Image (cartoon, rainbow, N blue to C red; front, top):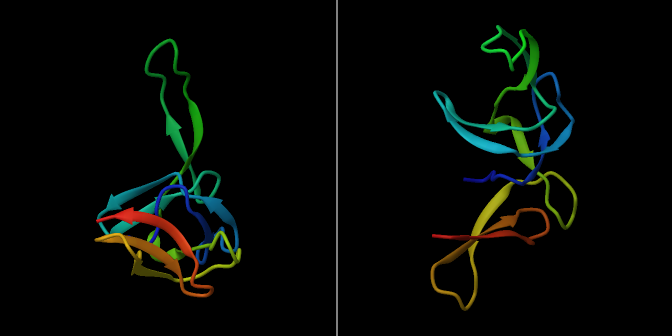
Length: 111
């Protein structure tokens, strides 16, 4: 997976195109993977009162964006980039995500 929780991403399509945000969670949806970014792609949800503690009203909730509509921002060059995969030298079987622009390691993953 190219996008992980905690990554800073740029929104490429939709009503919030051009905005940056940090991925809160990655969800499996019917059409692939979606990423939830707080404050981006907000939708209104009408709720009814469930008990004495929860009041009825309209709540703004972030809705998942398809993973193809976001692009990871490299922490080193601070630009949107495609993500490549490579192996670390010296460590057997350790894979890492790599920035295609500057070649810098984004994060170490185990697999």
